[in-house]
Length: 305
Ligand code: HSE
Image (cartoon, rainbow, N blue to C red; front, side, top):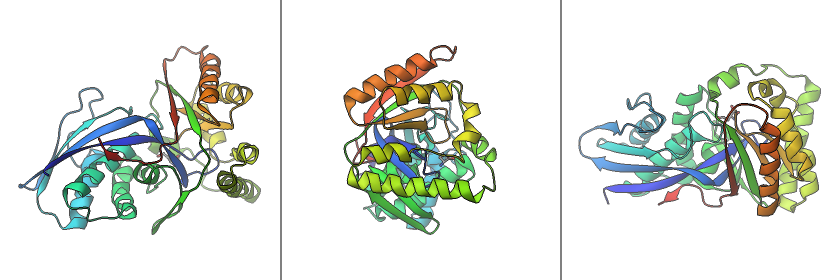
């Protein structure tokens, strides 16, 4: 095989109470990434027709991740890459992670599966680091592994795939761009101990509730007193949208990743439909266009198309 195309899913990270350490994969939307081997060294990237992403491999997250892959594999040939972005850059649903993960997952198939999934996560994180200036795995890990993933440690990497009941996500994506690096720069560097206790109590309860399927506890745990209060002013209508989702009976709602997308976790497809309608109505007064997505938690993660 000298060429392979994979689909790399969008992901919701942070999940309200798990900043930088909790994420899950979506079935929709996704990027399609095609990687081909070539004998000459170097990485060439097809221009992206819609979003105009960089074709310089040192500037494109997929190129950065593939260069890290080649170094780790001791591979001295080259790659040709085409990315069809289904996930808009700067949307808060793991666009850069999908491109990085898709590229390294495809390269790994072409080079005889040299790396295990957790090694691929570590390699794909170099693309994420290029995009955000920070080494976090809460999008990359669920994109590679599927499902819900807890990142106990990003360096050295230690990730845990979490058991969970069947769940759906409803997403509202206002068509504004928030750069992760900027959304990180505005975060507090120190937090009161009481706030830290509250957040790690919520995260522990959230993981326990996922395992037991206790949706009431899951709902109470989806609270964050550190990150969302700092970031929500970047997102028009945030409080109204979350309140509308909660009133529509969702389990919980908040910022997806660093925004601007907002997500709600739902117990069923029916609840997800009702919730996204309520979120849309609450957002409706602003003049900003939106996209919406409804998706179950994707169990598989990146895979051959
Ligand atoms: N955990 C990251 C953040 C996700 O919130 O900054 C975005 O890449």
